[in-house]
Image (cartoon, rainbow, N blue to C red):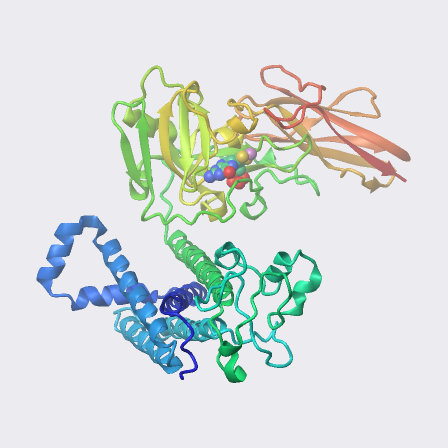
Length: 585
Ligand SMILES: Nc1nc2c(c(=O)[nH]1)N[C@H]1C(S)=C(S)[C@@H](COP(=O)(O)O)O[C@H]1N2
Ligand SMILES: [Mo]
């Protein structure tokens, strides 16, 4: 009698299929790590194309059009899946078949990879590692299916084994509810039994011991003959399969992510920024007071705050990027990245602020942006008169709702491609993001923007609106004390109090400071290139020993002074005066 006869065909096929998945997932992960390299499946697809006679190729192109590549890769995957299942099926009896099958896979993969015109030595690594992982996974899954004890849960002696709860083996009468073993929910061996037996730590006792009343079924004596015929263990196979699926999926996603990041970094490095048709007004020499601890006028990209909903930062290849403008327009427009770069570009210094910023908080930064004017692009599409909202969508599905009149009123609202003279960093929206002076980021600053629907506020809602944030988000005038720091201590004598204030697109006209609720005194203001940036301020202070409270308030160019009334960030931005307390000795 063969050792392995107990594993049913479907289980062998499933083990083969999942091992194939593990092989591909691991290969993808390795490709992501060692890349840039050709993924084995793609290489096999490419090789298939090369080996296909011209008439067949022509037929495929005619039949599938632009999808021919996807159809081909899908076909390669289907064939791989079928072969993997077959390998699993056959290696139930002969484990060597499994190894041979995977070696064959490996040879085909390696051949396909190395015959690509741009192949390098590293390109074979993902295939080799993936195939090895697949062969190992197949062996493991089949051993689990045969009920071979797992080292972690194995009893010290090879005790007669019981069947999985649920009676997976048709020859064993099922005493447990069928769902118990067939649910497919990954569970630890033993733990499942513990649950069925009423829970508790006894699950640790392991797979080798059958517990009365627990739903585990004692194997009939005949099945144990000589104790050497391992039973088919469906539960151990399925938990192994679940593990394999997780490994395959995680490897594929992670590898894709790593590889994508590499590719996009490379593409980003390859972008040549055009000159601005409309350069920014030079930043006045007096814009930066150069006081230690005071936020510099220009926030370096690496220090710029980042706020977004993206768990994994979207990796958008500029070669694939398009911006579609549609909805309430006369002519829908679709732009490529190259199209955008050909437009006359505007450079502007704009301070970005997040609505979530607490009074005195860090979510504000100033940069020089380069981009196409949103109004230029929108005019091409022709906005309908009754449209009042631009619903922009990012590559990852985030949306902003921006008032049409704000974008079209002549301010420097940009589809930005650069930040502080550098191609837009990936974290800040590469290849293209919106920047609209005067509006909080959540209603205007869509990163990785790919789509604009021209619509109305009474018809559409952007991402944060149903989550309790105002549909409209004009920035509230704010001021912040940077020096001295909250809780700081300083020496008695002459000191400087300094910070930044902002009232984007209106401009800051005055900043006042008071100590210990005394007289308000006017701070000196740094120069600014225009109304869209923050403004540094500073004031001298003769610090006297003891504890002190310093407060600040700004007045914007329309004459409005910041309200003292505190408000939390939700729903439309924090208000109130920033204050710090310090100790002077
Ligand atoms: N795609 C996308 N764009 C987005 C967001 C987002 O979550 N996803 N957040 C917005 C918010 S709330 C802010 S404050 C700004 C922040 O831009 P930054 O990360 O470049 O500083 O981006 C805006 N653009
Ligand atoms: Mo934000």
